[in-house]
Amino acid sequence: MTAMLNVKDLRAYYGQVQALHGLSFALNEGSLTTLLGANGAGKTTTLRAICNMVRSTGAIEFEGKSLSGRSTENVVRLGIAHVPQGRGTFTTMTVEENLQLGAITRSDSKNIVSDIERMYAHFPVLKERHTQQAGTLSGGEQQMLAVARALMLRPRLMLLDEPSFGLAPLIVRDLFKILGKINREDKVTILVVEQNAQLALELADQAYVIETGKIVMSGNAKEIASNEDVRKSYLGY
Amino acid sequence: MELFTNQVLAGVATGAIYACMALAVVMIYQAIDHLNFAQGEMAMFSTFISWQLMQWGIPYWWAFLATLAISFAGGILIERLLFKPLAKAPVLTNVAGFIALFAIVNSVAGLIWDFTIKQYPTPFGSSPFLGSQLISTHQAGMIGVTLLMLVGLYLFFQFTRIGLAMRAAAALPESARLVGVNTSWMIALGWGMASAIGAVAGILIAPVVFLEPNMMGGVLVYGFAAAVLGGLSSPLGAVIGGFLVGVFENLAGTYIPGVGNELKLPIALALIITVLVFKPAGLFGRTIVKRV
Image 1 (cartoon, rainbow over the protein chains, first blue to last red):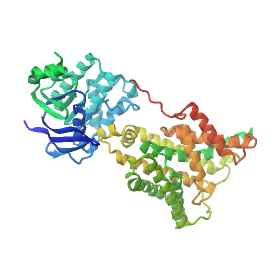
Image 2: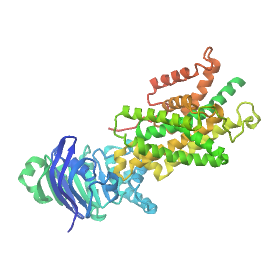
Image 3: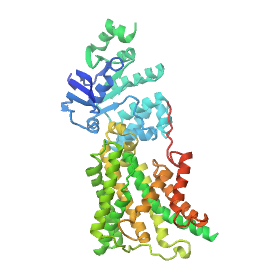
Image 4: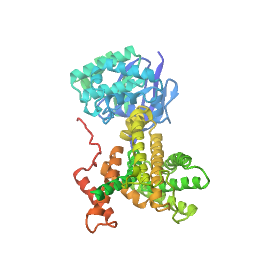
């Protein structure tokens, strides 16, 4: 397998404060990888650095193309969809408009219509509410909308920032099931940042553990799940 | 009763101009969260351009269209050269930028076309509208053009992809970038459209106030008032605000003793402050529905 995303010696800064201290990792095409870590470890920053939303140095390559110096929207146009923390829902627009925005860079209007239908098949509740203002959806529904919006890009790589945040456990299970399905059926490579380590490790095939801006552990998700340190620190048993 | 109808209609007619200016103000406010103090001067300059084109023998409507195109391009140019570099600057720096733009445009217009008052033609004529003595055909034309523009903008923002992208960029710039919208160009586009809308306002009011570099001073204040009254987040609100301010101003001038022409403006502003005390987002400003 070839690495689809290659991150080398990534350092990121918020003003004077350095948040990432030389992070390196790689994602294989078609993989579902999770990035675990405590609050403030640098998980969100890593995703933001990939999309050039934070000042960073180091090399990030996506399918052989360097991402440095590209604006956020140009990174997205390469086929990288980013579901940000807080979901980034356009709350004043309708559900359907949110989905159309996800496809705003595409020009194949026929396929966009059928993709919207596909999203409604994945997430029936969105179809029920397609004319509703997105801000009136529940947290779980908004998270589904955010995932659907990201998929409307027909991304090659999807970055998810704590999709489980603030959701009821049952809804999280549903959502993760759908993510697994998207990964297998639509061949979308997924990198998911999570605090809910147990669920994330069940879902993922690869895992990285990050602590204070550095990768401290990496490997197969099952191995990581059975690692004693990880169990104590992140799984809590 | 006839006096009342008369005053209301005259108010609606001037309100149409305030509505145009308010629309232009709202367009830029949506894009960059600042009030463009130079909006009126830009509109005045556009009007002079159309006047100049007509002086060169170009027919009215061709001059009108050419002016819209030139104003659109000019608005984009101003944003790229002056306000894009200021995007991350503090508010006061931006305000200084607007005032500088105001002064520059005003003096350059005076330099090129001097400060004497000029006649400006109307394509609608100034005979009574449909035989009634209440409003003239020019006033009816102003109302018609404003409403057409509002409908056009509504269709653009609701039903085109660029309109959708512009709304997204205005609502949540970061999320918009994450779906691939080039927010920086959306802002420039907003400036171009605002500048063209302002040009329409200038061209429509010029036959009434005559053409000269200071023609838009009062109009812009009313335009701001209308935009704030209607709600800075709502183009429809801006237009309704424009009509309301126009009508209220006229009625106050006619019926409240001692107000007359001189005190119209303070009365109109007092009304606006009253509304804002009770509805801070303006009459039609969106109160965002949000579940937390």
